[in-house]
Image 1 (spheres, rainbow over the protein chains, first blue to last red):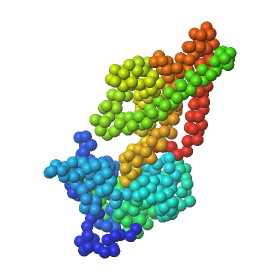
Image 2 (cartoon, each protein chain N blue to C red):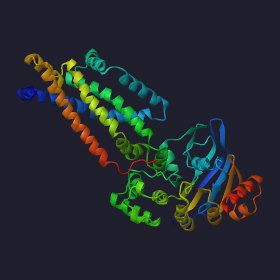
Image 3 (tube, helix red, strand yellow):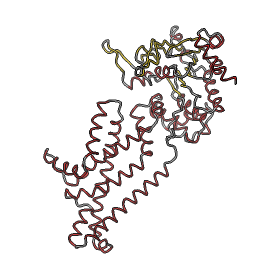
Image 4 (cartoon, rainbow over the protein chains, first blue to last red):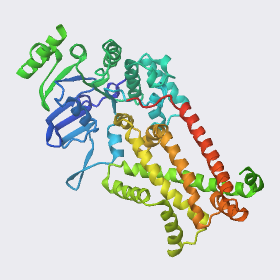
Length: 272
Length: 218
């Protein structure tokens, strides 16, 4: 994926974060699931978010995409505030349309794929190209085929989701997100719903994306993948960021007791 | 019975045509209104949900015969002169819209929220998501209860004879009183209603078989 900032970057823009969050908090009823989170994502950076279930990592990703409105703090995509605006000193929700505009650079892949079952693999990829970008059927299909090619599924273009394996469904979902030419991709536990033997094909596609310079945030339980592909790993527990470092540091020299415990539990489970 | 059918088929057919025109118009108009109401019932805004819920409760909770008479007598009262057949179509439309809305609401609630999130994240607007992602699946999911509703409206259209629309039921009454053969006449009418509804049921079953591919499995 070519990055606009490698062409003619104003000197400061290169440092500018694509996604930035300041002090975001989120409550479900009385339960505080996110507490005062700061987050920043540089162009081409790959960040993996790990942590025990219920630690708030998926909620963080969903708040960064405004699929869950955050209660406090602010999220900026390309410098634009997401979901809220100031109206005479008071913070109010923006229109759905404005939300769409601000998060247009974000593509998202879900744990349970969420392909549209009444559309073929190719139609899943072309739907937004036609509806949002206004491409003709022919142009959208050519573009869609190129995207399916990229995830190795061109020969499944005419299949409905029900006749695809979990791994294939997730690759179609990645192609669907890529079709809109996102500047950043969010992955919410993309391999957690897959049979073990299908995890590899999805991770391979993601590795290739990372190698091509795609900016990515990945909520995952795949420690091996995080260690190899991430530029930075964030460990979350009980709604807070506990540690955030390059994988070599984070996995080999965990500072906090909670991360040590988490890694020990993981090792015990994966060595047996 | 067959004698009645043979001797009176021009009037019977005319009555049947009126029945079909009134019912099918009401079903089609009710579908449009029903879809809009279903969107209202599933709205995230209380101020939209509430009046839609009230509408549904009224039209589901009162007898259709009463609704017919109310529409027929209320409209002239507020200065709207309307032909009996139009009043009949209007009343049946308002009635079936409530039932169809409830059918569609239940269908919409079966579409996994994640599919809608995926559409929104791809930049597809809320309205286009309804039109292209949600409703095509809802129509497939709700075809059996929708068929039931269509058949119900066709049968309930017999009630519009009370506001002097000469549809199949009223025509039958007229023939019965002229020929003094009520049993044979009403059996003939029953046969005609049954024939139409059997055809409708077959069409629905055919569509259902054809549309099994590509439905929500989550």
